[in-house]
Length: 409
Length: 112
Image (tube, rainbow over all chains, first blue to last red; front, side, top):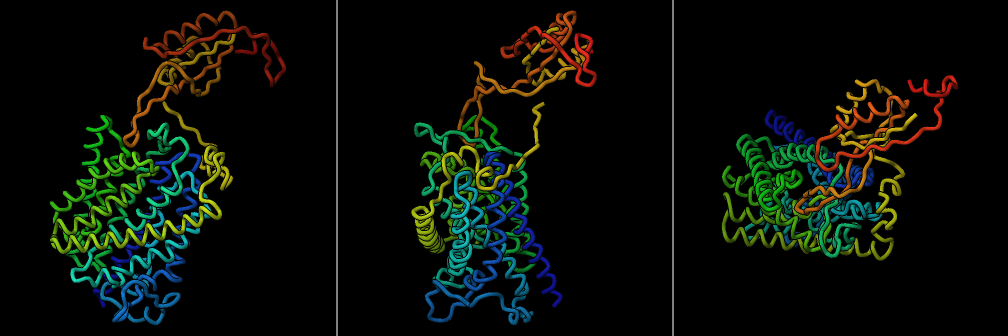
């Protein structure tokens, strides 16, 4: 009982830290975009966390953990609407946490996947179709995706089970795949490409973006630390160490490479490198030693610099680098489980590839259908006038910084 | 009465303001302006190099009596110069009349 209390306290603290990540995402996204779209981005992020939690309570939790029966294909299950107060009363539910904590911790994760998309489509997507997408994606697609592995579905019952400790694939790539498809269907912001060449549309508040990244890093203590699903001392401490080392290595390598490549100390690339390292370590944070963690994070940092450039080359406009960070580094981190650490090996690597492929199909397919239908019916992009004058003015009738003046000296 | 308008570097604002106070020019207005010119600034953002010709400067508008014209201009010239291209410009024009709104008085004495 005392052990359950200790474990449960840690899990509630981790839940709070993952909640805090939504502030990190919000600040990062508004920091790396233009002033005229700030309210719109904040509105989307607040919508995601509020409606995401309600949906997770209504259907998500029971879609993600349906308790697949024997003979089930492990593709889809549903244990009924709402939360189960009877199950919750049983403190033998799990030795690491109560039923309530389980729900809330997982609920905080659920909204993250849609938040990743929010940054990538920023500054030009219409609000209502985005909200429809969020409802379907957070309410339905994310929990089904989660059930395939964390809910005991088919990826968990492979001969060599697919492994994703805290969600390099299940959370980050699930968001990243959707971001990729959404950005492709939506098209680039006006002015992003001139004669086929990518142009810079600098973000308006780099201090906020920096605060966002440091908050996300802090939140990751809960994201990965809580994914131990108890306060087991050895595992939680190791996970915090691997998480932080990977973040540090990711930032350092991204900074070094972007400085060598572009002859410029670019803070935003430094920041994206930290996030790349964090996403990279997430799949195997409990399997790695310190050296593995530094290597995985460092390689993720290098990937970020090149992925940002390649995504630009492909004429995909991702204002905050969400595809590079969450999709590309998510894939890298998932593969890294088969290359480094306790589970490294050919069979594991194949299972990791099967997992990545399965999620690619589910996420790109569902996102394509949702956004394609929305595009053909109500439209997904704001008018040119609205985009130029700002979504804050037209969608919300508000200014983020009315009555605010900056002095340069 | 003369109106002396000066476009100066923002980094020189403090020294120009001090120099104006020292010669007895205590009242003036200023605002930040953006202009275009030959100067190009290079930037890099997320791996994309770009340059802007937008130039940030501060615009001063000073109305003085005729006997203050020369010392005001000299103060700005001395305090505002770095010797590099882009130090700015001074424009001088005549002012027909000046009123103090509080009392309705007019003429040069209202400038003090």
